[in-house]
Image 1 (cartoon, rainbow, N blue to C red):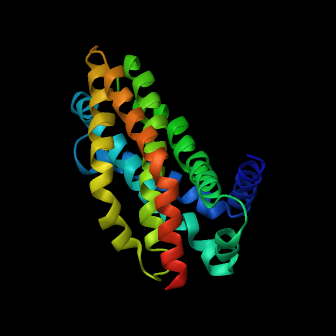
Image 2 (image 1 turned 45 degrees about the horizontal axis):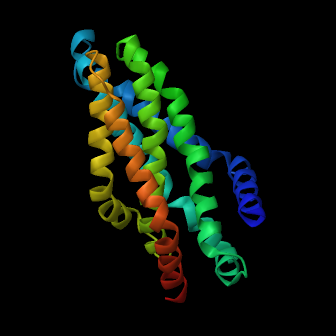
Image 3 (image 1 turned 30 degrees about the vertical axis):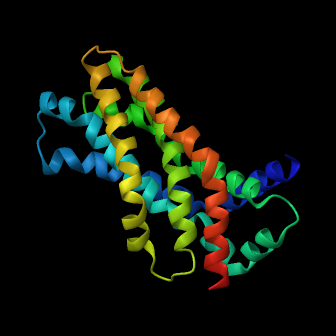
Length: 222
């Protein structure tokens, strides 16, 4: 546990030193959502209906944008090899990196989402569903995306391959997340969809750290 906490602290310090990697997903998220009304329609009633899908697609793409950097810097400076050779549990250290990725990407996206929801005229009653679904959903995306990031870390231009690998895994999270917000906007019960997303995140947590460790060893050895 102490090794996991040290790794988590290290990742947070490195993330806040590389502020451009921290800001890029947030800027992308904000730009996609704000440009959508200009390209589709300024009608607030229509935007209110489209808002759950718009925000969730933008959050998914923003998370995908940041996944490539989850292990990239450690691979480039050689510290990834030291992590894999460590006497500590590799799975625990990988889990710490995944949690750190969520804390610097998914959590800020979640906190920013109400402002963008208001801009798209999303009903006030849907804000709780929006934040709850994004908080749990972006954690699930970080979990599922870690495997793809580990498999492509040794490739110089692996961003497209990473997207192709993880996008099928992201679709269920997107469907449940957007439907929970849409249901809340129509005063329909939404906690079941969020529970499904939570189940996906917990299920991923049971095998993703081990699978990611295997993928990292394959990438480093090649």
